[in-house]
Every structure is written in structure tokens, then in C-alpha cells.
Image 1 (cartoon, rainbow, N blue to C red):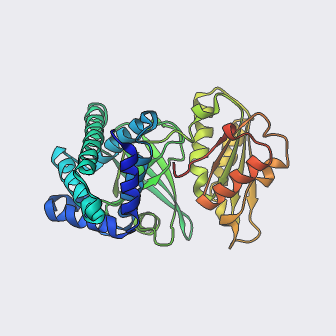
Image 2: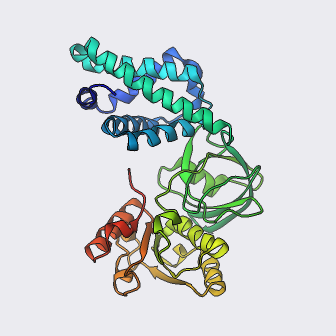
Image 3: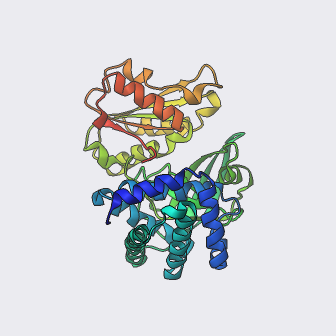
Amino acid sequence: MSDTQALRDSFALVGKSGDEVPRYFYSYLFLIAPQVRPMFPVSMGTQRDRLVAALGRIVADADDPERLVPYVQQLGRDHRKFQVVAQHYEAVGQALLATLGYFLGEAWTPELQRGWTEAYGLVSQTMFQAAEADSTVNPAWWNAEVVRHEQRSFDLAVVTLRLEQPMAYAAGQSVMVETPMLPSTWRSFTPANAVRGDGTIELHVRSLDGGLVSSAMVYRLRRGDVLRLAAPVGNRLTLRRSQGRDLVLVAGGTGLAPLRALVEEIAWHGPPRRVDLIFGARDSYGLYDMPALNQLAQANPWFHVTPVVGADAGTFENRSLAGPVLRTAVWRGRSVYVCGSPAMVSATVRDLAAGGIPHDLLHFEDAR
């Protein structure tokens, strides 16, 4: 991309207008291409945040193709679930340029317009090519029927789905999910199991305050409902990051799901290695999956589980679970995986690093 610093400076200037920017962008887009409105959720708040985050990352990484190109390719593959076609890319480009021009005013020079036009052309071409390549090997989404819905506590459910066709994924990867109650509203969940021969996937879902999809899946989902699942993504929590080392797994609440999937992957496909799981919860009801974990431990002597119950349910989400790990020597030389609420992950990773665990052995998901 040419003159990437000019792109960054102009994007920073536009960003000073805050939420008005994505509002203007989507208003313009829906005006010139009303046919795309059904692709988006009724509530646009989260979508606006995603737009700004995506543009910010593209501009920030404009000089680093090793980071930018895979990210943009994944965006293209992800957008297949919305049935995006070439004309949609053109409309988005028009809306983006119009938005930049509106907020930059006199600073929107012909040179800057050419730079943004060129940059968007490269990004949209990369996205489109990645989507086209993916369409030759994967569907736009997988249909998955609800075959079991278990209410494990008031706000937590374990949902078992049966895929209409096989999906290849690595334990620790996540999938976007759309429910029939909320069309065009997709949220990310991570299967709690490795790939099974019967085509079933287990999702652990906690209803979050204001979480439309999670609440629908906990309280309204019924056996026989059909969900849509997008292609699996991510590698931060997959086994390949461990490079064959023994593992320490630290799970808070439903952050257990991807870590249990790792245990199943090792149990079913090997190679065996020592695995210690710290499973933290606000109260005893939060230890919702202990029967399955105990069954795994009984069948696999290399796997050990330590449940940890928070003394104060009101503060557990902000509490570090590093203590049970650091109080023993089992972590030395091992890969450590952490999954849970953002606050819990942040605090735990901070304390594990302060306690001497090297950063290259800490695996977790973050905004990047």
C-alpha cells in the first residue's frame, strides 16, 4: 500500500468523531445498497465496533504483509456466511470513501482519496480471492441440529449439535454461531470436544447480560432447532502451539470448553503427555462439567483435575487463577493455556508471567 502513514493519520483524524463514523458508514451503505440490510443484525452496536476494529487493524498492519494478508484473507472467508458477492464489495468501498470524505472535509485531498481507493481495492481483492478459494472446499456455513439441551444451572446450558455434513477443525478453534431466533446475528463459541465420528459438537453457553445469542441459546433453544455454524478459526488455543510439551490448563467458567477439547484430542489421537487442569468457578454450580472431567481423568492417568471454587462469587470474574498453578512446580517447562472471561484471563496471565512463566509458554486469546 502506498503512503501508509497518510492512511494512518487520516484514519486517526476520522476516529476523533467516535461512534458517528460507523453510523454514517452504515447509513450510507444501506441507502445505496438496501439489499444488504438483511445481512446485518437488527441491533447494529456490535457490528459498528467490529467495523472500526477491522479498519484499525488493517491500517495499523499496512506495512506488515505477513500479519495483514492472513488477517484480510480470514475476513474474506468469514464473510462467506453473509453470502457476500462482488457487488457488495463495490458498495462497501463507495460507503467507505464517502464516510472518509465526509469526516475529513478539506483534508480529503485527491491524493488521499487515491491512496484509500488503492488500499481498499487491494483489501477487497484479497478478501474476494480468499472467499472464492474457500468456496471450493467448504460450505458457506454448516447446518447443525440441536439433539440435546441440558440446563446445568440457571444461566448455563450444554448444547449438543449434530452437523449435517462433516466439519474439520482442531481442538481449541472457535466457530461463529447463528440461531434461528436471531437471523444475521453471529457470536463466537468454542466446541468442548475434539472431532467426533458421529458428527456431534458440544457447546458450553452461559447467558451474559445483554447477550442476545447466549440468552437465546440458554433459555429458548429446543431440540430439533437448526443452527448455522461458520468455518472454524483461530490457533492460539490449539495443541500445535504447545510444541509437544506437557500442559497446564487454567479454565474459568465456560472457558473450560476449548481446554476440555484439548484433553479429548490428546486422549483420542495422542501422543499422551502430562496434563493438569485447574477449573475455577464462582460457586459449586459453576463446576458444571465435573462428571465428564472425572470420567476423562479415570480413563487417562496422565490427566489430573483440580477444581477451585471462588469464595466471593461477586468478584470471581476479576480474580486471577494463577495461585493454584504457582503454588506447585508442575508448570516448569510446560505450556500453559488460559481461557475464561477477559478479566480473568488478563489477571491470570499477568500473575503467571510475574511468577516466572515465560511469555512464549503462555497461550490465550486476546484482542489481537
